[in-house]
Image (tube, rainbow, N blue to C red):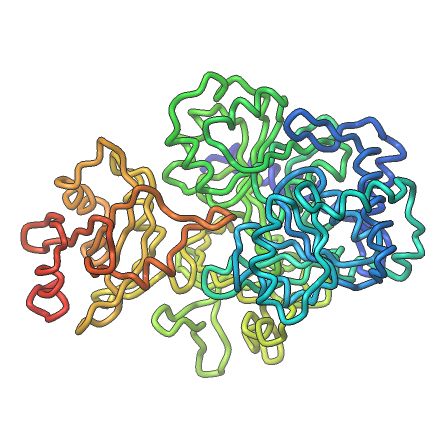
Length: 593
């Protein structure tokens, strides 16, 4: 790296961090100023600025604030008090923002329920919040009704925008005028504002406590990192019940008087039409969203737009340069963070593949470290003194963040104490310290860049070697015809470890006859998938995460799996159809894998 490149790298980092810290300067745990106060001030000072765009609607800051006031007055009329939880089950639209903003005006806590949940997981999410009332979008009224009998304590359901919409009349009767601040008297930034749930890919969702402080840190962090102003428009296709779409994307513009363009759900075919139509200047992505756009046919507006910067997480290095070139994206700011955790960072200069950076001169301020990790036992490695060891550059380990009482470094945990304790690691680098476990394997380089390797549990051992599902997926994604790949490990009777398996969504130009040879040039023998499963499409969660648990459980038994299955023939170095006879030979040990 040349001196000029080094200077540019440090300038990008220092200037960006400086903006973030400047915007956060008034955010203190004991401060009574919350996001509610920011919106109320903007409604007074910039009432006609557009806050939200949705379909053919434009919602000004004045209208946003008035809508939130109606929800607050309604909540107070129902006896909702400071600290009470109200469940919010509604698909993306302006009323979603008005609803949780209004609940915060009333001093309540909004539980943002995943709209993809059904039955027991839905009832569980509402139940762990101990919600007294539930705001339900009319489009999900039947879904709620089906889950309601599973609730031990049933909140009062209030439906809006559909048949039996008993909330609409109540809101229409509620005044749009200012809410007496006595309703939230005593509320400070360290109090709970929201419950946001984990994805539930490895069990029932957990409700993470999100304080006003954490919410403002996320909002200002993105506002500073993206250098937003009131002329910016954020295009947001991500679900509002999650922190990426519901806090980061919103807050990046709504803290400065800018606008957020809300879409009900992501559409690859209409994405660039929307960016062009609404004159978006930025958008927030999830890695799979970027892959969908790349797989889509060319679009007339894919380079004809006003996008100046995009931000998100999960943009894999194998498609990053291609994505940036094809869609003429001037700047990409990848980030890393968890809703409930104290580990967050941004890749301000756009270094391909990096999820963030902590240079040596910021290590005392940003206390995220990569801890040496035992893949097989899924626990950090400890020395003779009982303490953990930090990984040197290039070595993968678990990323962890030191827990202190400093703003931004606390761990507020979940509604269940047992869930909280599972995420805390004690006596890490000194006796008595405590660190938040991210559950993610990362590595760093000599410049302090962090690179995501895999989720703990996704990395598995085969043939005595560690296999990263992400690295295998990257190798598969560059194969012609492979549109999507979901890699995981499956148990094989009589074999140690787990054999690699890949569920693939492929196009017409996919050639399975040459796949083994192509992978041989990019992956060591132990990392090449032993089994393949071809699916018409890959299942994802509402936050665009690939579902693996069901695939792992189904394994490679053709009697249980209707999709075409293949197994790697080690002798012929090719993939063969996996039928009942070949399956029987594998599980009885007649075939060597």
